[in-house]
Image (cartoon, rainbow, N blue to C red; front, side, top):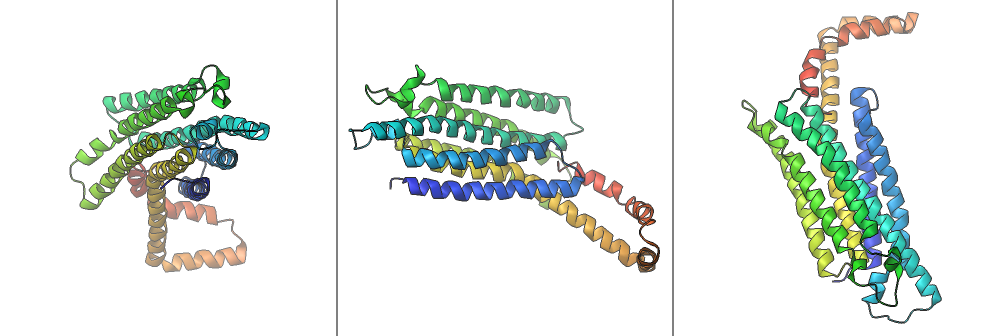
Length: 324
């Protein structure tokens, strides 16, 4: 069954919408947990803008078409208006590939920040692995971006119809390099999960959570391989490329943000539960606090709050090491 432009557009809207929701939930959860914004917030905001830009660009790419789809389709006669649209669609397809690459690599940065926070106190080999990964991510990003715009030389081949520009317009090199780089980074990040699994005296629930994180990483690699297979099977047909790029976008977004969202949500619930327990253990103190607030204002609240919330800090400290 051939993928249509409508299918690709619909899938793109759904995956983009869900990805934006995931990123917004992560921002809110992390802000509630930490009480401030950090570097991951900036990355999430950048990813949201990239996702929105890709939606707009894909609208034109899938409506106007590309030279690759036109030359390897059934239509071989083009008027001036057709050539104009094919040129715009082909150029914008390069922008769409740049945007989706940027989104993938931003999610890799979020996942690396997650592991960097987990291993705040770490062995020397872990430090080397983290630093190496911070070098690999920008290096591979530059390589994929260069292949996106330099695969066809001269540049005008990207929208040339006659004579045939050749197979460079299929962008197989860009696709293959992007997929291989993504898989290498995913495997690099998965290596951080191994020492967590090998730690002794872990409960079954803890091992299941870490195992789930490990499985999600492999699932992302599987989706990348499936995307490669489909694009090659349909001769780099643009709707197929767009559809599977959208699917991989959603998967990578979920894998990169699910651990932080889960950990932040669990910590927030833990704080509320401890607060309820403290109120239940000394109800007369909380009643006195409420009466004082009503009669005299809230001038004493910060002092009492600090006294009451200082005790669980040590219990949260150990757990917060596992969530960025």
